[in-house]
Length: 74
Image 1 (cartoon, rainbow, N blue to C red):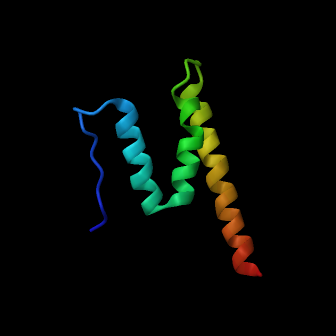
Image 2: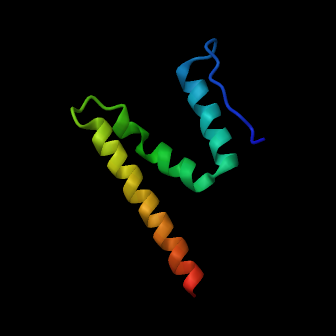
Image 3: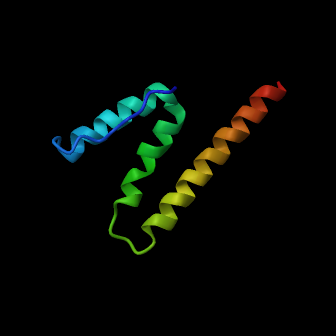
């Protein structure tokens, strides 16, 4: 069973977020990087924040998948 993560309600948000980042980096560093590079977009006040966040994630995952495909062809 993979390691699990739980937020601690007794810790500040920033500490929980850092612990989550550390945990995810141990699981999949590339996906953790994509998430945390895009997180600011999700937490912005813009009307389309969620849509923009989703698009950033999709674009980054597509690029990652394409790089893996290209790497396996060489």
